Amino acid sequence: MATKNDEDRKALVILPIVLGGAAAAYFLLRRRVVADPEKAILFGQVTDAETGHGIGGVTVNCNGYTATTGSNGHYEILNIPGGTYTVTFSHPDYETKVV
Image: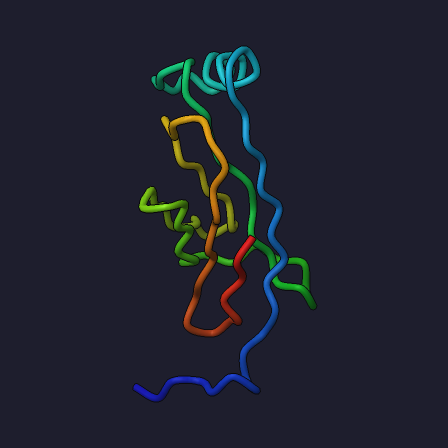
């Protein structure tokens, strides 16, 4: 399978959200997800910069904690210890984005 070169890759739009403490607990209760309320949650949506449509299959890596976006571009990573992180978003057809 041929891979795209850097000039052919499209741009990602990243919408990350990080919650901790009470906000994380509210998010978890509303979604009925079990997670440690003392830790943080990273979630958001990855969209195509041109079309605005969600991109499925994007790998989201937060210092070793990983998730893959669903078909609508949404992702979430639960139970991340508090701290400052570098988050990398990568997909074969798009430029890698580091935030």
